[in-house]
Length: 290
Length: 305
Image (cartoon, rainbow over all chains, first blue to last red; front, side, top):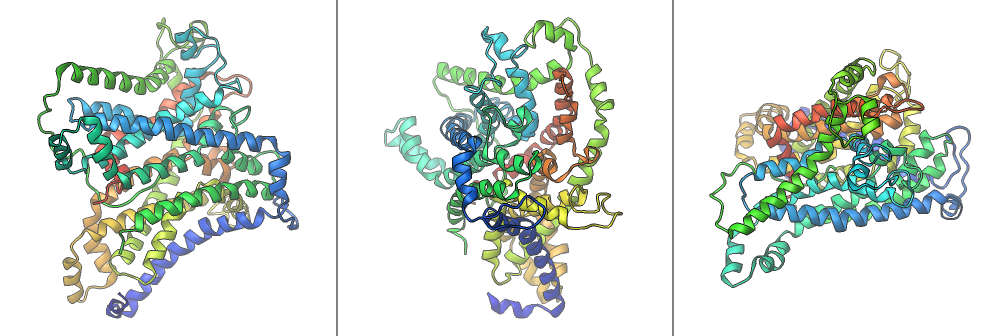
């Protein structure tokens, strides 16, 4: 370990310090520094100018008590997570299992499924408008309904989640497919010899070996649900039933009122939730590291 | 979005053995199901292309789900010239190319320092970098915005004279946000390169820089290609950073500029569809051309090697 350091000349050490130093400065200065600043600012009523006044936990109590979009956003973020987790992710896994069977044309099916992954979420948002449009949209034309899919507060979050799932399924599918290909085929054969049918073989033998992949997919799903932003912003700037925590944070800086302290309090809530999952993920990831 | 760990093997590479003989009807059912799903998945994109080819008054009369009376490429011309898309493409390139090069360069060097030079504290560094990449951007965007407005830049570097509303600001945040993931992936890849090559060079008195630049980096080409493809797509698709950290309409990258195609009171969705298709085109082309790298990049690390 440290013994090896001796093999470096003074010049080598300088190069190392500069290279790693730049990385650390950029990372701390632009990522972790601002993250900690969010925590500090969340206890102030700063509006971007003038003096910073300490107000303790008042932003948080205002948030919970006097800011209706907050609970709406919390509800939507939870729905988003549950929908991606219970609908989109299992469907992605299901497609991966089907595609793992070395079908003819598998490559085409795969490409079709993850085509949306390369699209920007903003573009996904615009495409969603073509499908869901009240007057000319395809969905109403096909179903004969005349629902205002994006304008109606009670349904718009659902149809937007379907659009988000459109992109999520392909992502999950490709990760599971790679995981499935890495499973030792002998396992499945052994299960088959022991008389297990395909379903039993999958749930009892294959699925448990996918544990590391499951953790990764879980974290991707949670992070995606917390990050969800572009798609609702492209549709209606995240208003009228499409509130999300990420949108509220952004609204408080680019919106009419610049309420830095208040926006930071929402950011801190996002931070706490995401850190829980990030820590889980990293401990899984680094478990086998030296 | 960006996650995961080691090993750069593409699942596509292995030759497919002949399909197993399952029960015929079941196989057909499977194909039918997958075909329906695949078509359903392509449909929205095809719809956008279809809508972009039809005049507004026709779709306003008949809806998007109808047979065409007239097909035209006019909207593409309009999106291209009226919305000045070429300029926004250029803005995107001004941001994405340096950000991509810097990210890969910095990440590969740090990865080398961690995996090969074995600097002290390497595990902590790796964890901090990777965790930073997983944070939702909104967690840090408010102070970042304030920070950017406070950092002055000389006028030749940014006409706003601050990091806010400058290309440099966007480049920096892309590098900062993405390089953690790249460090992680490249470091894992470097560990799979036999150390003997580097050891031999060390005996010959090669400097650290030489071992990194001329010996290790060329061997990392597969992982750099995969990451490059993936990162290009992500940086190109960025919407949030530009939205918050840019204010001049004429400096926006192309993804954010799509909003300019919306009118104040009236939005021509067919024009917007043409714009969307044009904006999506580069990533779709990259995806088709570098399909193998893209998949390798996405799955890097989802399988433990």
